[in-house]
Length: 564
Image 1 (cartoon, one colour):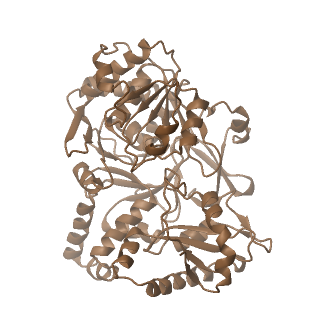
Image 2 (cartoon, rainbow, N blue to C red):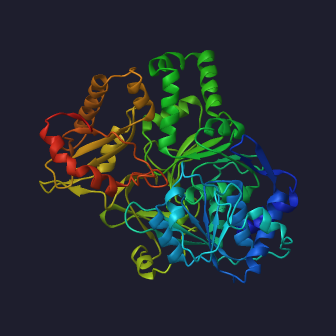
Image 3 (tube, rainbow, N blue to C red):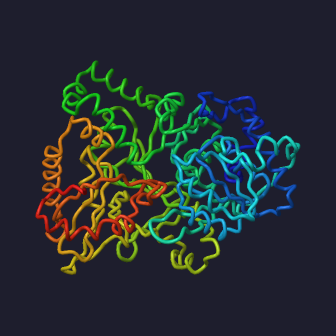
């Protein structure tokens, strides 16, 4: 890179647009089974035309342009167009509630809403569409459900490509990411062009990212989230490599196999699903027998990774919640370089990472290049990163509260830093609760211990104001299917869960021992607001739903209870 410190992410795109104009940048599968490839030149042409349209509407530099849709090639093309016009993107989670969408559009003062790929099945479009502001101009991207508003392809035909795109300064805002949060209204995190540039420089300097322009990325987690935006959009624009998209959940495996990514970012929920799907085909007992065999074991492991579409991955990442150490070891035993990382929206996900040759199980790694970290009052992790936000939009008081006098961001997470600088997360500052006896319970370590069970997909420990805490368990989809098909009975699973409870209690302090486990009947999803768009549990919503049942469950005197 020639003087990369001076280059914004838009500068990087312009470089690739010129140098590898005919190379494929984005690969988009469509619902009818067709696959469309967009070259760097084609992406640049469409983005420049849309930028010219935005400017033609009389919208000044700095105007907020909202972007609602699931991941697609045109999500990235639209974001580039907004940058080229000198405007600020406001991405909206497709799983946001209608009320959250209304709030963000009003709070950001968005002047235009771009509506992308949505279907009302894998997102919340069915509810959102009924509550869009009547006076807000709309424009449909390809794959949009709205055919009654101006269409992307028609609009760009009316404009010549913008020749002289905006040259942003490092202090200029580039995007406002509204955090989904686990409670309260979304907060607008304002990120700068300089902060985004610092993100890809941190990837470059850490040495762990695949920075070859022949690398391949795969995008399926929400691009409205900082982690996917950094790991897919920014990384591919910075290093000039190709990105593949998924069409839907039903085509996910085929889409992933098409991509054969070399760099792959995911969350614990998917890593757990992959593991469970392998266990369905090759039992853990058979794995223990076959994996150690010199040649056969290697061939089986390679086949597993190939069937998952992960056989070409050079480095993979997990984040958003702790992944059990046993599962980390299982993936590394397969030959997958899986690394636990940590970051916040407020620092554009650039904080801590394990490295292939320097990792510590149970930790989220050490600070990335240019990042400083420490433990503040009440065990709270404080981080100063070169990618740090400019502040919360329209909320200087909150910005001041979350920032120390010497510039560190108060993360709200609790943690411990060992002698070698590795950070271990121990929970959220606000997650600890008091039992009826007045003793504090920290849920995260207990939840992590329970989540090691292969039949459990999500866990929430609750019990504020009760005599003893209890845990809510959401079984995996595979477990539910096995029970429905008669391959697994409730009594067997109850014994397994009771043994799990006993192991967790043996490792816990007396006041943190679980009175019972409650197996919930409904899935926790983003649609029912029990998970965030990044698939973290919404603790407050889960507690609100289930805590009223706790005393009734406790009165049953059973160690494992099934919600009926």
